[in-house]
Image (cartoon, rainbow, N blue to C red):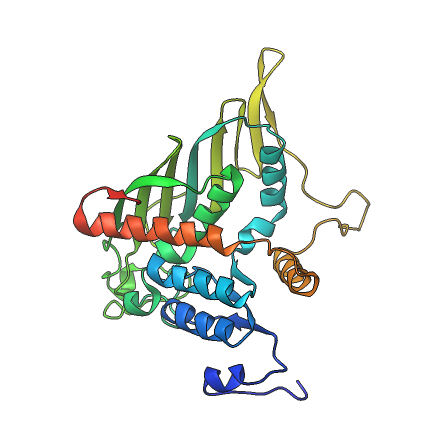
Length: 312
């Protein structure tokens, strides 16, 4: 691109007063300090998920945004899918009543990312839980509009990451078992302050035949919903059980797919730019992303100690 600049030191980039917005797309360990430096330099920041490798670092980011009166958002683009947006609208309209049970699912049978530092626990802060489980958890909390966890119990597993190459069957080719220090699967049981329960499932490699990534299931006092076969809403009407499957395609005309659904990544970018230009709140609030990080941290800590993790 004409006029584009390349920096080997991000701090030099931050000195450029013509730059108003910074996107942080680094390994997870670098999210916090780069974001804080950018905010302190007077830039708005969009940071890739997860917000940070732990809640202490995430809080620093939130505090820097507030201190500098700059916008901060986290890249949870799963919210921008047509099924997610429809589900959220139904939740806001009270279709489900009081949502008291949910499942956040991000399961891959064999799809370990073999590039970059994804499998390096030190650089990333973890494996599938912090990588794809974070998307499913964010989607679930957002749908429920519940951001007050009470305690959680977690388990992590390193059962398959040491498999020899000829036994891996990985979608992106064999991984290096010596470098694979993150977990291959992780699970959490979360109880919220109001008594609601969330089960979180995440895996890059597990012997299950029904992989599903970044989806949620919710059950409320009036109705429930899942994403197991497209978006399905279930309930009772006129004394009978019903299942509603909204048509989320924009088509309907022969040879034309329609333009009614915006690409999720485009929608995410558009909403972020509009928030900066119009001085409005971003679609993903940093306070919400902080709670996601706190719960992930709690699950990892519970897995290490073998005890429930209580949120203060």
